[in-house]
Amino acid sequence: MLRYLAYGPKNFARSPLLVSTRYNWEFYANLTGWLHPTLPSGKTVPPGESTLWLFSPNTAHGWVSSIDMERVVFHFSSVPELVEKLCPSGGYLQVSLRPEEIGQMRQLAKTLDPHYRAPNPASLLHFQRALLDLSLILLRDRRFDSNLPLETVAVERVERAVQWYLARLENRPTLDALAEAVHVSPAHLRRQFQQVYGKSPHTVLTHLRLERAMEMLASTSDTIETIARQSGFNSASDLCRVFHRHYNVYPNVWRTYVSGTETTIKQDQVSRIIARSGTPEFKPNTGG
Image 1 (cartoon, one colour):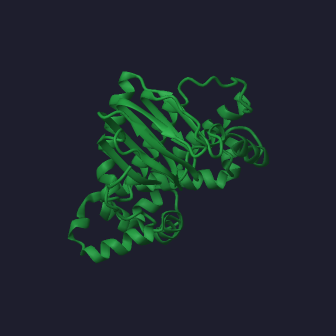
Image 2 (image 1 turned 90 degrees about the horizontal axis):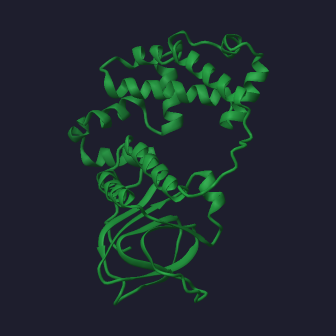
Image 3 (image 1 turned 135 degrees about the horizontal axis):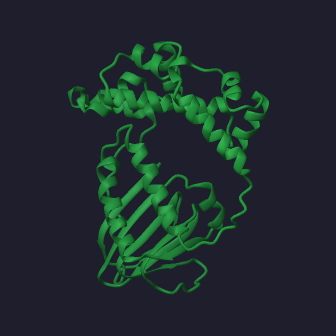
């Protein structure tokens, strides 16, 4: 989840940002000029031109920059597991930005800004995509062992199972039928789902049904009952129950936001819905 966003010109040359603790993952990039962090230990970190930095939570640091500096700042509550493993606790990662990545960073900030200021359920997808883009930039020059702990046959079988399942959602196929379609036992298929996704088949398949339901909610005017049936749920009440358990909002309310008709709802109602869905309220874009 995006917790903070800021972008534009900044000058830490005359008034450096003092060392303080951030409680989220902080992506900080200077797109022009130079920038470097200051640490409580007094350790000197060489300044970087057009650099993306990532600081882990609870890492005290400040910033010093050139007079003319353009920056973007993103705070996230979490990062992908691989990034978390590579970024030491109380430490940071950094990578020099390529020219095309500088433009990408500007575009990320501009795209996220309206979602940060007035979030809706679709905003979560934009936040996740931006987090992945930032993570991939940080990992760009990393070299990883190509011998992943996944059997190729397991990956291929699970992907075949997923595609077979998606093509038959409306029929609500069982795990036994799915296992038979890819020629393994249900127990073996469970193990391979766990190996590939780190989750049970039930969890993965429920997510697939919810994705199909969200797609139909956003792009059709079909009834909740029709959407439930075509996305593999037993009934409209079944879809509503599972949807609310996962997203803390009911399908008809989610559809209202996506369609844009939320402007007809009174502001106090909107605030209550946002609070229930766990979406952060807008906070003034100051500091950083």
